[in-house]
Length: 90
Image 1 (cartoon, rainbow, N blue to C red):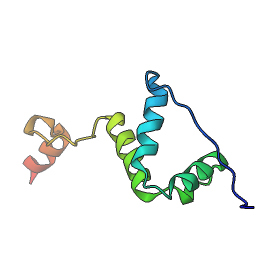
Image 2: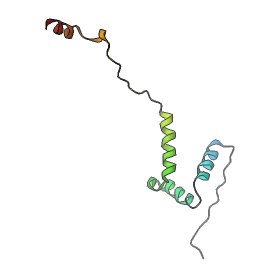
Image 3: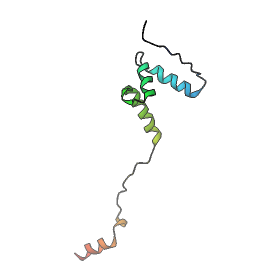
Image 4: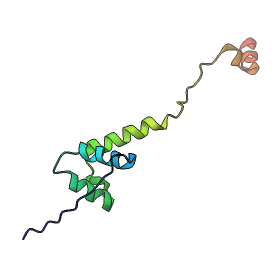
């Protein structure tokens, strides 16, 4: 007798969470799905396929949308009077 067990999972594709799970599982090549599910349940992220990790990270980075700090170019009126006074004294 084989030392394997089978579990059937029923998803309701009208439920957005279930649909997302279905899309994610369908994108994983056959033969890797069981290992992924086991890893996720046991929280062993290191065995998650690299392409899935990249996809998740890209989605999260797009969702961040934080402002990039840009250093403004200095203008002549931004120069302190002390600096101008020193230069004039030369």
